[in-house]
Length: 245
Image (cartoon, rainbow, N blue to C red; front, side, top):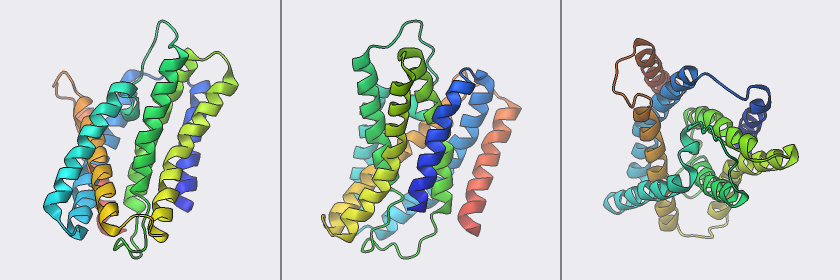
């Protein structure tokens, strides 16, 4: 429950911040993305995937579902245009309401799946796992994601109450994923094998997000000392949190 509250609070607060800081310098945004992308990429390799494959009854089959989850995120990104990994869109014209609804639905599905990674059903081999590193990674991911979404909403919707409603719905998606994952696990609504498949798909989804953020912060392939420092910091902090906590 605490993880769900933290994710909701961070996402909602960041979404509200766009009213006070409607524009942010792209270079600062890229540095923050480089750090969060490096953190998520490291976390995916040293925490999510090892845990998934070590607990899977059939690692080879789970590998296929990881690939399926990766492809699912490719489809989701077609509708979100990269908002979920911090793409700031500056529109000269308002987006249509149908486009906004499609964007929100796609992001809601993405965040719902993402949140389920923090759910630990009692029969899915998770005992008293420390999820601090994973929670911190998701918080780092939610900050640019929520800011980018709120920026799109601010440029497309005229009524503030509609913007706030959209932000609340998005902020609630990952917490619902956490609670839903626990619920279906505790009540054994689906089998342990079904949960393995679900988490395989979600892991593939997360792998796509982390690699995309990590590699797209330098599309020109130019060396930047500050960017490299952000990447190294993200990797070292992720490794330290994973080892020490």
